[in-house]
Image (cartoon, rainbow, N blue to C red):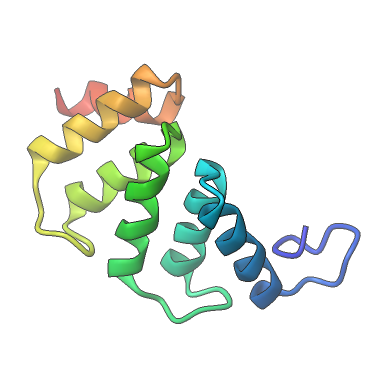
Length: 110
């Protein structure tokens, strides 16, 4: 709600705080959203290493969105060494978790 300003005043710093809390409580979507805040530099300084850390945790928690985003990080070599094999692996996991964008990315690379 804070990220989008729905029902409250828009506040990226508060959004980051709550996404961090959700991620700390092993909520995969919270980790993915926190990673996206670091991608965009919203409420935090843009940081590709933290992006990968949060997408990896989200994927470990079986969040398809996080796995797909982690695949993108590997595909482009952002925050990690570029690795098509790992990108495919994470896109496949995202697809297995029924995340449509992961399936599309997987189909393009396999």
